[in-house]
Length: 265
Length: 167
Image (cartoon, rainbow over all chains, first blue to last red; front, side, top):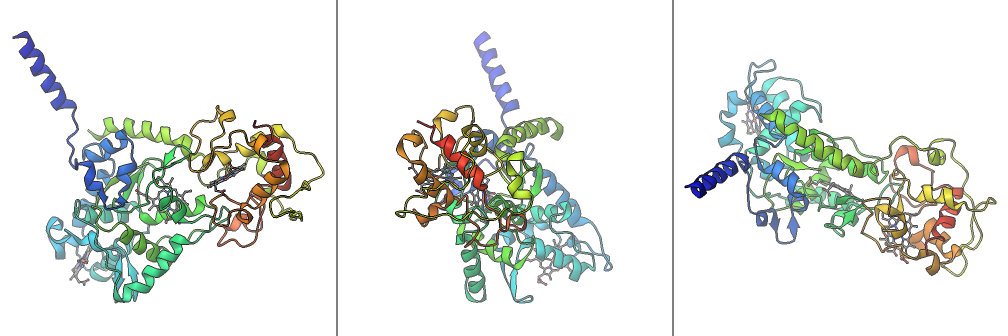
């Protein structure tokens, strides 16, 4: 009887402390052929933080995004929901396809800029600033609807020259330190750079919650950070250069699951 | 519910703050006057036998004590980002993406180290190691560093004086 009670207590204790593991995929899911999500290189604690929706600090942004989705704004008296209804249905899979070539602008568009264009053109509302909490929240919310689905980036046809531009960016040494993205993220993934394990620099979890910034953060902010750490002049967030780079980097991670909101160091 | 978990986040963030210190340029240390003040003129040097620069870049002899501070300066491309130096064991989290610099002083002459630091691309064209005393043939250098070398000429000499003590 005593043993049974002890066992019961143990079971209860585990049930209470074990994280909900909302994502909770087996580690193999974070790898496709030779491509590893940043999750693969995280320590145990950071992984647990990402896994549990109740602990994952990026879920704040997703919740905020859900509220913004429903919020009427602009001259047309509409919200995103007015036209799109239920995001869980209509936005499912959308994030797997972005960034993409956009015939309207004749360039590459990513989710952030697309959402801003929806606000301007379909709602008559002002665009959000690129790294604003609002734009990140809506982007995180839309991306979150594709969680678990494989990134599938189209680089054919009119996207091809932008893909080449992004690839060249990736492989060019730059800055006073004179190193390329590839030198760290292709050639030295898994190695220790000072205290940090270098990942492959994948974007499948973006927007991500970055612990050292304590905020939800975009792919372009990360590009800017890596750029300035090689003492290279960064490009503006949302610039054509970073959009081409984002296209290449997203294609590089083809097949990896959307993880938004990921947690990264 | 979320409040409890924030302490964990902050705890983790504090953990990485140390690693963060080596990332983008923070406040300049007194060691980095050449990175912020007037741009010092580049000292000319002569390469001998493709592998050495025998002549020191400055009149003042290298100071190993200052040199130690130069090469461990976390906010100016410290060798420790990439290399391990076993004799600098008080510096945690040393990099492991390049060969260990163990016994450097017995393996190299000062003249060889000078070229290795000034411009290692002349030895290994596709090396990841930065050229610490070069301003040309770079792409899109961040505005505040244009025309500036990572180390000053005196930094190079002081660094060599220290590196030669690693036995």
